[in-house]
Amino acid sequence: MLHAEFTCSIGDFFLETSFNLGAETGVLFGPSGAGKSMTLRVLSGLKTPSDGEIVLGERILFSKAKKINLPPRDRRIGLLFQGLALFPHMTALQNVAYPLPSGREKRKKAEEWLKRMKLEGLEDRLPSQLSGGQRQRVALARALAAEPELLLLDEPFSALDGPLRRSLRRELRRLQHETGIPMICVTHQAEDLCSLGSKVIVLKNGRTLDTFPIERLWEKGSRGEAWNALGWGNLFRGTIARCGDGAGFCFTGRNVRLALGNCTNMPGEGVVFISPDTIRLLYPSLPIDPELQPNIFSGAVQETVLSGNTVRIYLETDDGIVWQSEHPAESYRELRLEPGSRVRFSVPPSGIECWIRGEAREGYSPPNFA
Amino acid sequence: MTGPLLVSLRVLALSLPVIVILGGWIGWILARKAFPGKMLLSLLVQLPLILPPSVTGFYLLLLFGKTPFLRHLGVLFSFPALVIAASVPAVPIMVQAARAGFSSVNSEYEDAARTLGKGEGHVFFTITLPLARRSLLAGLALSSARALGEFGVSLMIAGNIPGLTQTLPLYIFSRVETLNFAQAHGAALLLALAGFSSLYAVRMLEEGRRR
View (cartoon, each protein chain N blue to C red):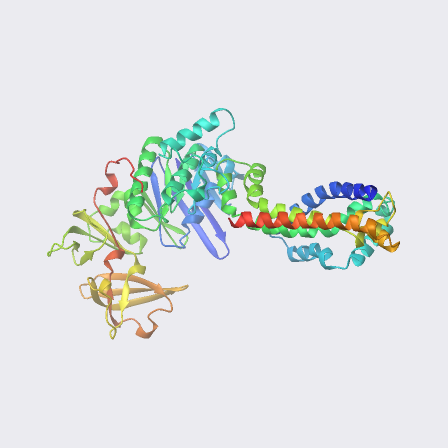
């Protein structure tokens, strides 16, 4: 359905992407600065690649060899911007009606879209008078009203948290199911990836590292090869259950046990993901914040990698697990870390993302927005 | 006073389109495009704003009086010269306002409109222009006041010919020269009112933006 293979450069950043996508939801996954948003801009035609080919269905959108470069307006690719880009001088209805051809049907169709996104009664509100979740749905309605053949979503949930995030994810799955429009979603959060996507496209430093179906994340082995392709973050498979003392939920993997903060009501076989920047190193001489008490580990620095303003540290615990942690380059200078130094670190329960197997395939229920 | 008033209004009516289109266009280019010599262009455009009107007038006099083709157009000391004299110092004001206005429009809105299937012209008139509206209108109010009150450059290249190139500011000058203060008062009051309304309009536009 979509075939994309292109190279593109801005300043000294070089992007080299290659992937195929069928009628499914692809997730562009990778750390910040990997080139995810730029990939979406190239696909939608807002940025012209220096070489390559982009084909959607039967249509060639871009081909260096054939000298074809369709402008954004002719590509029929919807783009949901990270900041939503709702036109501030237009009401919800006018925003949704914007892509529709003028005529008698225009208003009716826009109203239908608003109704479909459960936004009745908000037609005459300006974007500034809507809540975060409502704005998100107006932007989705507007993108879908243009009847795109491919919908791109740039971190669609970045501004939302908790329940709103989950209900919008459900909404998106429902829309994908109903409309059959293939989608590409950009995220750097593992939770979104696992509950939204059917195919993962892993980007790192401007390169497509791997493309694989989401199920491969569940393959046997303490850390699937698929995840290792990403080479970023800490992922463990295991069981989520009530802790021994019954106070909360705990995760038990092959070599690791963690107290969990946000993951309630979800016992079962599951996965936890810890973004490297949530890990805190502990100073030996200072008292420890109660929030950091539950999951304290001790290990040796294996390697430190400085890239730009952040430093990534690979920490190996005594049972052989290698953790990744990331910090601003100027932090922890007093610890004088170098390969071999011993250090204690904590994994704050609130920073652990978790989900149980099968959540991604659960049936959708009617959205319940705050 | 009716004669000079009519001349002034005709000058304003003819110079406004020049100010809006030329000033708006240069402002848009400076806000949105990157090209070699952009800095130089922005400095040159601002020059008439700070040069003494006699200097601007002097160079225009040379341009229209000595340049081969322009010399034969017979622009100097005629009504068209008044329109040029009113436009030249007013355009920079419009350029500044338009540049600020267009820069303030987040280009993501325009990109969104493009991905929704709209062409460049449609995007400009439905997104860019309405969002830059307040700055543009404020620029319009200030530059019209400047054009209406233009004196020095007009005197240099259009003269002060009653019935032909005598605008309200030039009329006031002539009346004062002949010690006819009553008539000067009337015309001065009219221009002061026009200036006040223009400032009031700008103020209202600023208030609306903040709300």
